[in-house]
Length: 149
Image (cartoon, rainbow, N blue to C red):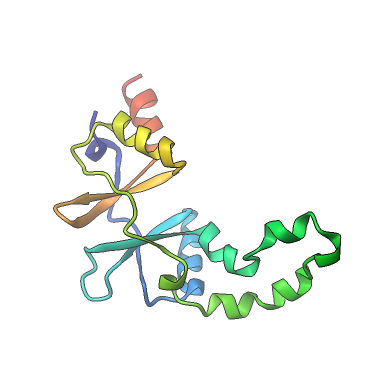
């Protein structure tokens, strides 16, 4: 079984110039945890990926330093007030540029091993430099254990 047998095609995307609000809204409304980021002028050219986690990190960039230090404890209400500013940021400020990708002809278990190596739940599928879709751990599980099972 190869990636193209299980991947999602025609996936939702965003551009680097979109706001975090727009990207987050797409992810929340479609219940997906990440979006491929495509070039503003060539919507087939993958330039990055953004996750829900990426959109939240600017709220508490040094959270780990505060959680164990009562003297420097974070004002969580202030962080929440900061949310509107964060949602105006652009996708290119928080996205992962040049993400790891797989090609449609790759065996699904090889793609799954790459995902496991980097602790990824989904990975863009690129064919001849163009975004062809996205494959998730769920897609692979469905393909391997339900369709083949």
